[in-house]
Amino acid sequence: MLEYITAEGREVDRNLIIVILYNQACCYQRLNMLMDCASYLDGTIYNLEQKVTNFSEDDDFMNMMGHLGQTDLLLGNAGSDPLTSNSLSNVSNNLS
Image (cartoon, rainbow, N blue to C red; front, side):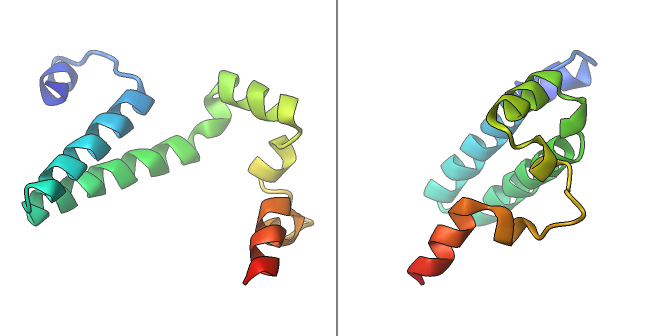
């Protein structure tokens, strides 16, 4: 269905594409169809990379992260190491 919609040239939300591809991969994995699973995981990874690469164009996402005070971390604050400035990373590092 997703292939049909995109072949028509209609716009599809990237979040929906990611969820559909990941769900398809999980279904194929459950059916032990690992080559098909891998193909759908590749598609999922590609779309996630595209989303991360273009996240600065997503106004809703940037507004949400700005509200949470995380915009500088997302935009790659050149002066700091994200692993040392991320409190979650510090907690997980202290646990291991």
